[in-house]
Length: 263
Image 1 (cartoon, rainbow, N blue to C red):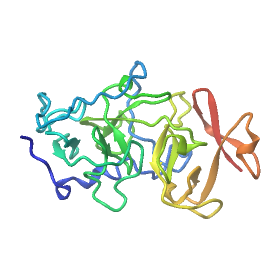
Image 2: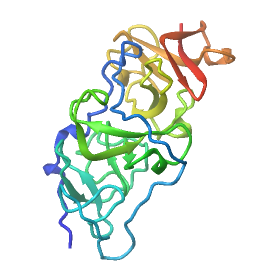
Image 3: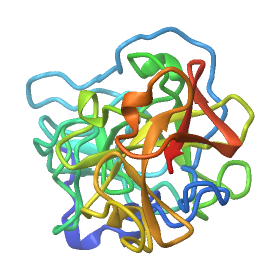
């Protein structure tokens, strides 16, 4: 029988690791910790756990269980990564769906449904390659110990999660209620994708933010001061109720659609 860990034993780095704080000088938020996508198809994530009391067989090296495919925990427990060394443990399985907010008022353990973990205040499903992440414009992201993009920091062993592939203009199509969709990494290198990130604020306009979380859904914090609405640069004047859509200095484009901000 597997041993379940309790919330107070979990390292606090897991909750804010991908929280927004600054993004290559473009959005005022840091990019997520991402490994270049592996080639693959849009297959559904694999969950090795089955109904019943038996723990699926695996040979994990940093704890009693393996996050992906899930194995080593008695049903219905969830295998999560506890610290930057990649130590794993069986935790309670929650009900929060993928790409919904988590860890806002709690320790985050036991919130996410099986096969997911609370990373950057968002329940994200585990993966090994992009083939494990269903849907368009998604990646399999390697989480690192430093909070900086791969390869600028050592990876947390065994901790890769799917990005959401969300639409920055319509976050609610993929992300949960009150959750924003931001563009990563926005470095002009044609690797951008959308990912869900918790947005707790209601800021819209000049002087309404210091960090991204201060802004309302659909808005991003620029220069640590102004919440500006995201928009599509070409062909969608309706995105900006006031002003026009201005492209970023470093091109931000997902699946051929270039994004900017209303000004």
